[in-house]
Length: 322
Image 1 (cartoon, helix red, strand yellow):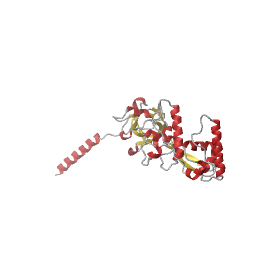
Image 2 (cartoon, helix red, strand yellow):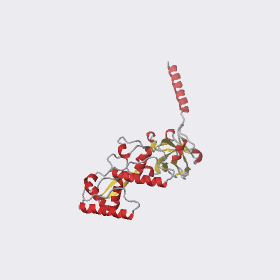
Image 3 (spheres, helix red, strand yellow):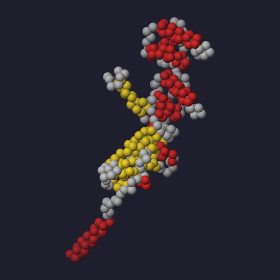
């Protein structure tokens, strides 16, 4: 019986020794460069429709003095590219010299190769001496077209320092989820702003600096959009936009002061802005201190304009007499 125990012990020892020889130890001839994120955070979303800057408005009108509030100004198509920062780490050893490396874009099979062109890299990057962690910057370009792309960023091993290779497999590719889509808002009112298209909505966001708001001052906003569209089309012959905007509705205060200003038209409203300057804002404040004087001022401006432009008179009737 004792001999049996001895034999079993020898066999178990031999098996353990054999298995121990088959377990590889950590050994790497080159250092592995990888992205320094948890594996479930290896991506960033860049949605150009949602990009904005913060504007600070000082109540005093003087920056740095008194109270202020902030507002979002959505950049739309005016933002041509967005910078993103990438965190990198070295799986291996820090060295006492800078190591140059390059990054490149990759896309999954079936994705349009043009997607690669919407990432802008430096000609090369440097992983600094003595570091095991570092950061670099990459630009995501606005594609112009209304597209969604998933673009991967990987180490270009063929054109990097020969002491570098890929790190952990699950940290080799960082993904950029690029979007330049402008889906139709659920509250889009075609009776006010006209037929929807993504390019039209993108133009609105770019010019107005805000996302669609059904309660906006469309009298002012549509006038702004129409003017901007006319300027764009005039300066881009052969590349005119294929959408239009309806005539702006009357301001909400118009009916209250109709006895002073008469029936609404966009041309009349614009004329009043130019003729009255800052005093035009009094209508928006719902307060006209001298209605008769305001009415006469507008009538005089009307007559003066038509006298100076006999071949191109104003396209609306004289203001009423009160």
